[in-house]
Image 1 (cartoon, rainbow, N blue to C red):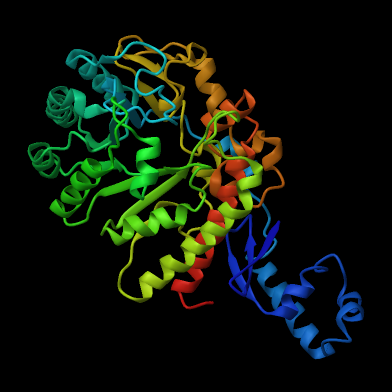
Image 2: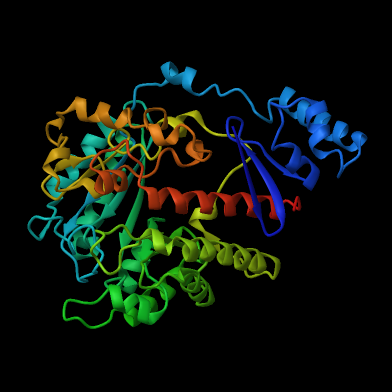
Length: 450
C-alpha cells in the first residue's frame, strides 16, 4: 500500500509496509496513478502527449527498481509475524497517588479528580505494594517506569517522596531501575519541591493550555478564579531551573480554541522548549467537544504549526512538539504495530486503594477492573482482550496507511466514543494522520530532501 500526499508544494509517497518515504516529481506522481497495474505501454498511452517515451520509461524503471529493493509496494510481513509475539510483562505503572485536585478543569476525564469515586489520597503502604507488584510483574525486564498521577499528585507530596526512596531501594535489590515521572498542574510546585525533582532527575509533565484566556476558561481554581498566572510563573521557574531538560508542557485544545497553533507558539515565545497539545475528548453535547465541522480548521492549524516549527529551527529558536517526533530511519516496529501504548498488559494504572486498571483513563470503571496490587491481575481474559486490540483486529485499520505509525489509536478514546476497543475514534484518526504527514514533511525538510 502507498500513501500519496502533497504538502507545501512537495509530492510525497509513503510505503506502508516498509516505512520508506519518497519525494517524487510530477511525472512519477502521475505514473503512480496507474503503476504497477498498467503496463508501460498503457502508461505511455495515457501520458504520452505530455511526456516523452524516454522520460516515462526512465521513471517506470526507477519505480521498478525501488520495488525490487523492497522500498516501494513492499510485501507486508507483519500479519504473518503475529505468532512471534512474546508474552507481555508489565513495564510501566501509572500510580494515582491523589484522587483529588486543586483545580476544576471543565474537560477533566477524572471528574475533576476523584474518577467517579471519593476524593482520597494514596497511603504510603499501598504505594509500596504497587512498587513491589511492578517489580515482580516486570519479569526479567531491568528498567521499569512509574508515573505519579492524579488528580494532583503534589497534594500527596510526602508520600511521593517516600515512595521514590523506597522504589530506588527495592529496585536495586531486585537488580532493576525505576524511571520516575510526575504529572502536575504546577500550582503546588514550590522551590523546595523543584529542587527535589531536579536532584532526583525526575521527568515532569506540566499542564498549561496556552494563552491566559484559553487556560483560564477551562482550568479554573476551586473558587472559579483563573489559574494561569500562578501556573505559568511556576512552570517558567521550573523549566529554567533544570536547563530546559527532561520535561514536557502539555496542553489540551477544544472547539472553543480551534486556533491551537497560536497557543503552541505563545508557549514557545514564553521560552518553553518542549511542548505538546492534545485534542480534547468530550461528550458531543459539551460546548467544548470537537466535531467533524471543526476538522478543516484543525488540519490547517497543524500545517501552520509545521511552518512555524521549521522557521524556528532555521532561525535558531527551536522547540520540540511531541506529535512531530517521528523516526523514519528504522521502519515500522513490529512490537509497536501490535501493542501500541501497551495499555492493559504492559502498562497499568493503580488507584489510591490499590486497584488495577488497563490505563489511567479506565480508572474507576468497574468493567475494566483487573485486580489489586496485593493479589495481582485477576482477570487474564481482560488482559488478553487488550493484547488482541491491535491493528490487525481493527477492521477500519486494514486499509489505513497510518496503521503502523499509530497502532489503531487510543484504546480509551475508541471505547468512550464507540463502546468497544476495536472501533477507532474517527476524529482522533483524522488528526493523527495529519500530524503524521506533517511529521514526515519535517523529517524530509530537515534532511534537505524537500
